[in-house]
Amino acid sequence: METFLLERQDLPAFLNACEAHRRVHIPVEMETHHFIFKPLAEAGAASVALHYLRTALPPKKYFFPPEEVLYRFDAEGYTPQQPDLPPMILFGLHPCDLHGVDVVDHFFARDYPDRTYQNRRSQAWLIGLGCMPDAHCFCQSQGTEHVDGLYDMFLWDLGPRFYVMVRTEAGHDMLHMARALFKPVTDSDRQSYLALLKKRQSAFQLSMPVADLPQVLEVKQDCAVWGEIAQTCFTCGACSMVCPTCTCYDMLDRLELNGECGTRCRTWSSCLFRDFDRGAGDHHFRRDRGDRVKNRYYHKEHGYVNGFGKPSCVGCGRCITSCPAGIDVVSVFTKVRRACGHGGEETRS
Ligand code: SF4
Ligand code: SF4
Image (cartoon, rainbow, N blue to C red):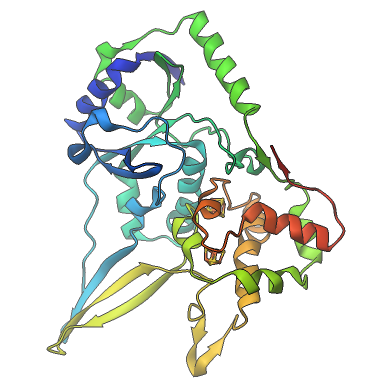
């Protein structure tokens, strides 16, 4: 890995230089505290939001869109409809979202290889951006507050300049799109970078103990807390829609009015929806709302840990800020711990 410095005022010039080669997408503040990833060509490089913490929808929307047509069909058969993504650069992913992309990669690129996803993902170069946590961030607890090897380039905001880490060949290609803007790093800059990391480490206000959480969940399968949470959860699925790691989807066949052709679509779904696991003969694997609520949380902190050695929650806090019922993932696990008399309280400051 190589490191460089980029002056703050030169960031728009760098993004515009990248746009000349690939479509660049940046975080933009649409209204107060409402951020989305948007094409630079529409937003303009000057509108890049460097202070944002979480976008409404996570980066997975680029590779696994909320709704897409996979096939057109008629009496002759199926014709694939899988528009590839033009070569792109996704700028400004925080460490939690980079880990989120890694989890979705795992699902669509390794566990269940999906050509559509893989084609799109292979077109994307990722530029990370450091952040300072708020009261809803708990990536530190989930071990996702730092990233290694999940980005091509990463920028840490030192104030007047950025400390730039270039990790991959794609990162070097981006560097050379505006090479004159990048300067050598001095010892003073390295000290500033380390001081920033230290400040960030101590800025986390929310944490939850996870070391033994899979074991606690394993022995508390019958915990009454899930039924209690189900009393307040609307099973609206908002938490799944905003989650950078949720991969539930539904397949819909839409027949056109002439009845002769149609489209097969893939749409985001949620394991919280009553019909998500409805099978033939009206058989439901999780008919009870409490079972569906439990399933989502178990997938994050129990099943995924057992399968892949880490939680599939990256601690981004999106579900906390999006839940209309005020259900907070950290409080949920604290309640389960309390119910089984197993301490390990969350901390909030
Ligand atoms: S957003 Fe809240 S109310 Fe809606 S399904 Fe998720 S936990 Fe339940
Ligand atoms: S479960 Fe909530 S906090 Fe965890 S990754 Fe998903 S949206 Fe973020």
